[in-house]
Amino acid sequence: MDVEQCVALVTGGNRGIGEAFVKVLLEERHAAKVYVGSRDEAAAASLVAAFPGRCVAIALDVTNDIQVRAAAERCSDVNLLVNNAGLFTNQLLIGAADMGCARAEMDVNYFGPLAMTRAFAPILARNGGGGIINVLSAAAIVALPNMGGYSPSKAAARMLSTSSRAELKGQGTGVTALIVGSVDTRMAEHVQGAKEDPRYIARVGLHAIERGVDELDTDRMAIEVRAALNLDPKGLEKRLAKLLHATILSTGR
Ligand SMILES: NC(=O)c1ccc[n+]([C@@H]2O[C@H](COP(=O)([O-])OP(=O)(O)OC[C@H]3O[C@@H](n4cnc5c(N)ncnc54)[C@H](OP(=O)(O)O)[C@@H]3O)[C@@H](O)[C@H]2O)c1
Image (tube, rainbow, N blue to C red; front, top):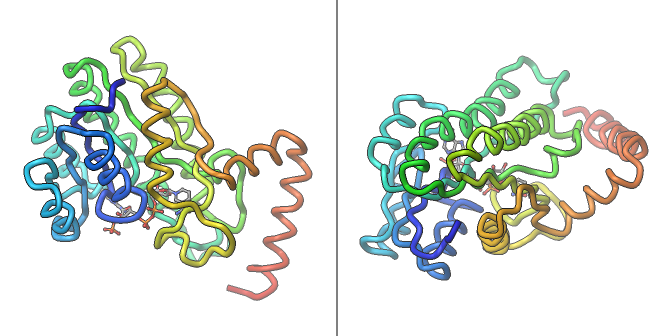
């Protein structure tokens, strides 16, 4: 997959890591065009104004089948799909009042990329194969009990990445899963410690799809989580359970 001159669609492209993908594609990687998927088209207005003719806003809630279908009809020239839109509700899995948040996270983080992949697979095939980048999380490789339904939804999306890579191999579509640790965006406002610049995640993600990398740990935290998992998986599970008890469960959220 050659990112230079590509036509990309970035879901949740109006802010955070998605916005960084849009900017890096247009400013640094000479993309021919980028569709900015945004629940509220107006939220992408400044991006559209900054890149006249090369940046197009589309109304796209990835949980809305009608909007997903409309996006596929309108963006038939896409050869790079970035499934970036994500939801983190910061609720417990068992202790939450009901299953609403867990269902919403599964809807956005798993069924969203699945719907987009199904809608755009034939388009990518017609446009030479192209590629799909799925923006996942370290929570996809390790169950983080203090993140409730987020971890299961990202783990499901990781399996989606593997299965869709196998299914779409024959049409020449590469699928890259990004294992992201901690990034300086609104989603991670509550997180302490070092946070990576969103542009860095976009840069390494684009290099990964170009090099045909299946799964990449994008930043220091992701690399550290992977290392801890490989070194002592049970020890890591115990430490995360202890952390949950020492923080959320003892303070009562
Ligand atoms: N920040 C981190 O530390 C971190 C770590 C690991 C993984 N990630 C992953 O990175 C991706 C981007 O997150 P971020 O950090 O940039 O978070 P963010 O700043 O909260 O941005 C989330 C984006 O997703 C969009 N979105 C949410 N629900 C959507 C839906 N149903 N349909 C379409 N768009 C929707 C939001 O749109 P609105 O503006 O309309 O709300 C927003 O554009 C997510 O998949 C997240 O899980 C982030």
